[in-house]
Length: 84
Image 1 (cartoon, helix red, strand yellow):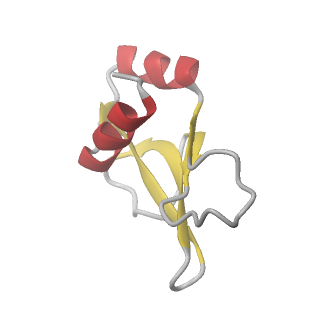
Image 2 (tube, rainbow, N blue to C red):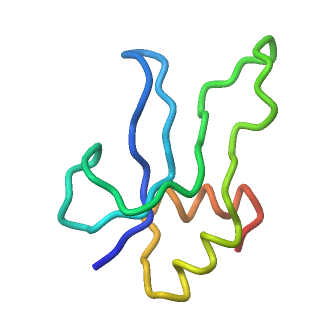
């Protein structure tokens, strides 16, 4: 089964996540099929990042149509980003 989930990146106390499409049996930070976005959970107002959530909407919807299941965290992020 294919899942849309988060891949953890960054430093020890400053994580950011890539939104990836991966097989459900692979490790959290392992091999993935495609990267479709990113998520920065700890943005301070002083940082110059434009958005904390960036998702390629067309790719996300295409993978959902193909049967990919979003994880719980991705479902909440999709609601925040207005994809649902």
